[in-house]
Each structure stands twice: as C-alpha cells, then as structure tokens.
Image (tube, rainbow over the protein chains, first blue to last red):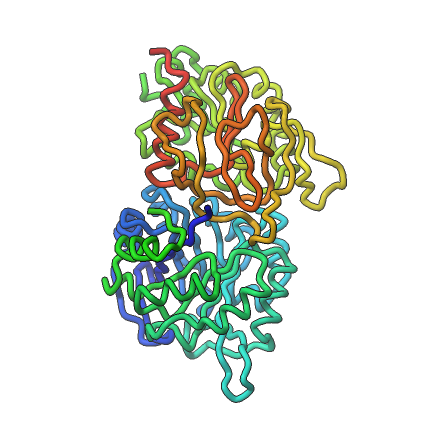
Length: 257
Length: 227
C-alpha cells in the first residue's frame, strides 16, 4: 500500500534554513546539509527546499548546496524557488534534485509548466500554490511572490481554477500552502484541502498549519492528501518525526516505518 | 589500480581494459538524462568504483552496468540511438540493471508516446514484455511515493523482506509476467522489477529508497564480481 508521506520543508534564504510566521519575520533555524541529513535519518519520506527569496528578488542564487544535499541523503527531495527557465530546472535536476517546484514563475507564465513537462516529464514538475482565504468574498485566492512581504501580490486566480489549470498544463504534483494557517500551528485547513482534493488527480501535498500529531492524522483521514508538509513543528522539535510515524501507524494510517 | 578512475574527467584514462577489470567497475551509462548524479551518488555512498560513461570500451569492460532514465520512453530511446549505445547494450553479458525508465527501456515496446507519435515506442527488446499505462483505478497519478514490494528469490533482493517500502515515481508499468521478479500494487498489481538472464530492472528508485534501496544496490554490486 502506498504510504502517506511526511515532508519536512526547509525554507532556505541565503544558504540557511529559516522560518517565519505567516511568511514574515524570518528567523534562522540552521545550516542546510546537517538538517537535511538529520531529517532523512529520522524517517522523513521526502524533503522540500524552498528558496524563498529567489522569486521576489529576481537574482541568480548559488544553488550548489543542492548537489551537496544529493550526495548525502538517500531519500527524494524537491527544490523550489526562482526556477523560471528550462535551463535552471535542468541544473537543479543535474545537481541531483528529484523534483522542481514552480510557484510565482508559473503564475507569470503558465506555459512554463508545459514546457518543463515536455522536457523532463511530469513526474518531476511540482506546482506550489500559495492560497489565501479571502473572507470578504468568501473564496480561496492565489497569491504571488510570497517570499517577500513587500513584493507579495494578489493574482487573478481563484485557487480551484488555478489547480485545474496547472494539471491541464502537465504538472505531476501540487503543494497547496494555505497561507492563513502557515506557521501558526492551528491545524491544516481541512475544508479547503478537501475542496482541492476533489478536483486534483495528481498527488496533493498539504502545507500550512501543522501543530500537533493529531493534525497530521486529520489531514490524511479527512482531506485524503498524499503527503503532509510541515516546517516549524519539526525544526523546533515540537514533533519528532519518528514518534509521529509510530503514532500515525498506530492510528491505521499507511506509513513507512 | 584504482587511481585511473577516481577523477571525474578521467574517462580517457580508463580505456585500459585490464585496469578497469581489476577495479571491479560499475558503469552508469551516460544517456544524458537529468538524474545521473543521484544514481552515481548512491553508489558512491556504498564506496563503489563507479564511472559515468558512454565509451564502448569502458562499458564492455565493466563488471556491471546501470541503465538510468527519467523523462519519456521516446526521448530516452532517441538518446540511446544518438549516443550509439543500442548495439553495445544488446551485446553485454555482465549484469545490467535498468532503473525506472531504464527498466522500461529493456522491454520490447512502450506505449508512452510523449505526444510525439501515435505509435508504440520500440525499446531495446531484451526482456519480452510491453510497457503500458498503469491503471491506478482512480488513485492519483503519477504513482508517487513509498510503496511496498513483494520479492522473488532473484539475487537483487537477497535479504529484502516482503512488504519493504521503496520509492516509486511513474505512470507507466510493466505488467505482471513470467519475467516479473518483484511486484507492487497501486490500483492494479504491476512489476516492481523484471528480469531475464543478465538483464533486469527496477521500476522504483533504489538510489532514493533509504536503507532498503542501499541494500538492493549493494546486492547489485555483489553481482558480476570476479571473486
């Protein structure tokens, strides 16, 4: 049986792992390689590295750390942030990344998704979506350039429409990051994730809001996502991955122990 | 004897056949595909003497050969043809292991057209089976993540227990056949590994499958040794 995946997310800025609350006030957590190795050892099923400065600042970033991570860890990992061209994607994959995740550049130019798929196959094309509950219109909307508060802007896309669009264009997986929940550890947005799950035929990763072990159980059982991503609860030692996996297995959720 | 193979740019210096034989070399076929380094890193973690090469002499004298692959079957076969690798692969008598798409390319045909043609893609034809769509019976595709395998007594799976988790990413599959050497299930049951004679392949990614994957790669390294 396919196991539900637990995915620690390492937000990377200037070569270090950082974490903010609701995308703001980033604090440094530690260096990339030791954290990556530690998570692999503790039983993480996959890792995501988000270079959160890249899209907003429009600059070329040294990503040779990707190769050092690939040499060291024996689980899959995904690199996100600032990948706008086929050549940048090729370099990440050549360094040893298993997948590349595209967020803001796909909103600026949706054809990037199909071009990447044609070149590398959809299995390594992940689309990250920063979704925001807009209370005024009672709807879910997509934001862009969320790596930098000053650059963050609304888009024309309702979340459900964008989810449909990126699948049509050939993505292989979707990470839905619910911004209202990010970093506040109040639980995943089960309602929104369930709505997206119903229209998502590719693997879906829930992101934003994990605070307790029960939150993971809820999101797997109620929103039926394929994977759950979390950052602060793992980085700060609030939840131990190994203990979480035992807990979930005990709750009859398919988990790789 | 091993210093001839320790540099990345040292391919021209390993044309000496006897030196390569002594070095018990594992050659990863340089198909130009994007994930070669992941496979190389995994063997390096096992202290294997591994070379990425498309050089016929280097390939022929290897103790064992890996055929990697990501992307689509059509593009991957084009890469083998353009690098003049088809004949040499067919002539190999040492253990040859395909990984993921590399496994699928050992089959006769694949119906993964990749939008370029309506007809099936002719593959290497080394294992008499045909690659077609994975019928996930409504589950999300690609089949992505850690799934369990049931294994045969093939030496690749020495010490691997049924129910072990390995990492898969694919949408096409080899059906269950007499050449199946391991199975998995996602919707339907399919071949997690196939083999015939010295040619075999795994649908999953042992290089990304943590300790279980390392054990499988070590089993592969134990094959084809002269000792």
